[in-house]
Each structure stands twice: as C-alpha cells, then as structure tokens.
Length: 113
Length: 114
Image (cartoon, rainbow over all chains, first blue to last red; front, side, top):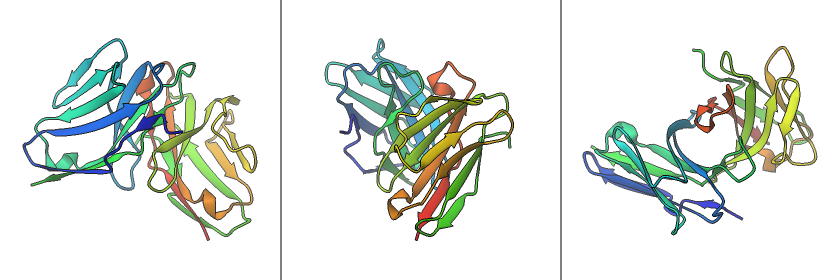
C-alpha cells in the first residue's frame, strides 16, 4: 500500500519558468513532510520540509505548499534552472516514528535551457 | 569529504553468495539508517541503528538480512544467500539525532545479483 504517491514520473519545464511537483498521501496522521532531490549516482539531498501545522514554507527559489484537507503537497521551483534537473522525492514521517521516512516513487524533473 | 561514506559503490554477487555493505556516518553522527531503492520505486526504510543498538528494524525482511553498528567501525548491512530480487540500490543515512531534516544520505551501494 503506497501511502505517499507521486503520480507524475516525469516533468519537463523551460528554464526560467515555474516547476510544480505534486505529491499525494493517504495517511492523515502524517505530521511532517520533506522533499529530497537526487542526482544520478548520488544519494538524496534534503531540500525543504513542512510541518503539518503550516500550509506553506519558503526557502529561496523553493516553496512547499501543504493542503491537509486534500492530503496534497506540492513543491514550486521559481525560476527553474538547468541545474535543478534531478529526481525529486516527496517523503513523510509516519505517526509513532521519529526516524522512519516514507518516500514517494519520485518525479524526474528536466529543465530545458 | 566528511559526508556519509558507503562502500563499495557497486557490488556484484552470484545467487546464494553473501553481500556486505558498509556505511561510515558523518563525523559526530551516532544514528544510522538503511534504505533500499528497487528499480522505478522510492526509497524504503529498512533499519535504524545507534551505536551497538538496533532501534527499529520494522522494514527489514525477516530472513537473510541483518544489520549492525558496532562501537568501533562502520555500520554493516549483511545479506545472506542473495537472490535476484535483492538487486537494488542501498542507501545509508546518518544524523546527530532529533531532527528529521538532519538526515544526510550516502551515495549508495548498487547491488546486482546475477
């Protein structure tokens, strides 16, 4: 049972435009969400996170939005740059676990110059 | 580079052999986590360890898999009698503890079972 879903395996965006990556979850008890970026042959790198008590968190070009009623979060990258091309994973902290992350299957973002 | 070090980067094993994957956490980090990524899937939690203790192994297969984090030396993920389905990328992460965003992942070990 996939509790964290990223339904778009890939996304292409023109350089300078906005990239929007989406993530849905089924467990309403998740209380913390994270986005990771992964380049080929490297481990995932933490990007940005959001607590369930917030609906928005911003860090430079990256903003994460959380819609608890829809069990949906999204990552906005503005403006997109070619170096942003990578696989983006959404992850959530299950209830009762302080350490265990539940990951989505990832979205490959390609930013075209 | 003071990051999380995993070795080997690539490991090929024949069915029935043993695989040993090593992870040295970042300096000052005493919490280690192992994740597995099967092709076309996200990372799946396997086990969480502190020095000399397994804290949470709820994601570990019940048979053939074991993990340790001794007082001295790296954390080891051991897979006995490997099968083709064990072929995956295995990632280790470490943290000082306490903060979810404190995870730092290594570059992974890609295990191929032939």
